[in-house]
Image (cartoon, protein in one colour):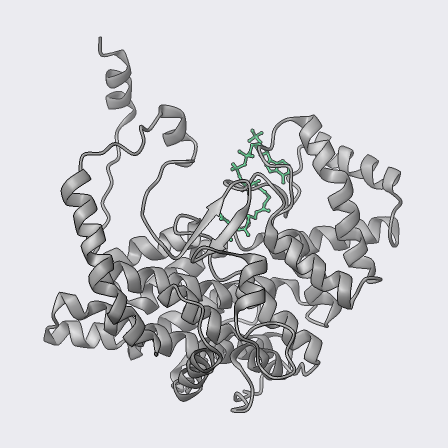
Length: 433
Ligand code: NMX
Ligand code: MLT
């Protein structure tokens, strides 16, 4: 069954379940919010319900209930591939079910049919100054594609609320189909000869991304599949998902809401951390003119912490264990590039830094997140331009963002409008007898 029919079949029960929860338990209190939480980035306050994925602090991400190892094991793979087809992952995110091989291939085919790009996208990007950050270009390209929004057109002429999700899904498939071509050609524009490369109809979504950047190593294609699966979603309340969901709640279409999500991902505390992380690792490597020993590493890291440095790739707002996305990439590296110096440095930091962070007692999570390792694998396969890494993260993350907003429309979620207070009002509330 294709994604649309699968969602349509599941929707009546999902709508009934949500309706019943609100009707029968509408006043059930989930959480109280403290002053500390409001001043502290709304940490731990549940702000939305989304079944697409969930981050357990002590286990990490589950996509539609499946852990990272389960996703990698159970999703269908293409011929001669070690890692699953990303089309199957999108099917899982959108429908909640592990697809058959045919269903996964059908998504890949849908993407091929929809992957053509209007000319104006690269006209816009070429008009930008050479020093423009690739994330700016990526977000701009998505925004420029808003000209193609079916939802915006249909809304203008009138459309039944119950059908919003279907049009969001069409826009989501159209947008995600074009993303590898956009991302790879931003790479070509920034770092190669700028000649536009078209996708190869014989390759899957992830392999095409690699191919269009001039990379045809089958191991790199598998790394792309792995990377693009791992970064697709991290529940509904991280900065990019939250931003995209908020913008979508105003019925801004999939292009607006995805571009907004990318603007959040571009921050160094969120997705840009992967570029920062590689930059930092290269600095360490340069400092030691190679790989330090454990004692040297410990001294260096302690000095960084004493100087008040934030070590990119470590810590997390929710996780309290090693990120399973870090572990999955470490396993890949252990298999295909165990002697790579940068990978060995990543593992040396992993052996050393958590103990020092625990001793320092500031970071609530001393363990690595996904960004601590990303760059070393990409660099190994020749993607050395680290300011491009967040685009690769974004290419994947939009799979999750578009799923969240499609389901928000399917469940008829209203415009988001929480409340802000003034300091005086807060003080009055606190001092009230
Ligand atoms: N290195 C040094 N100090 C740290 C680190 C770190 N990696 N992480 C947290 N701390 C400090 C933090 O600066 C804060 O210090 P202070 O009280 O002086 O302000 C203290 O520990 C408490 O912070 P937490 O409550 O543990 O962290 P929070 O939830 O506020 O932020 C991150 C989470 C992820 C933003 C934070 O750990 C960080 O900045 N890490 C480095 C950047 C990074 O890797 N971001 C990637 C996130 C994942 N992603 O892919 O998006
Ligand atoms: C993510 O993948 O979005 C990051 O790990 C950040 C988060 O979950 O807050």
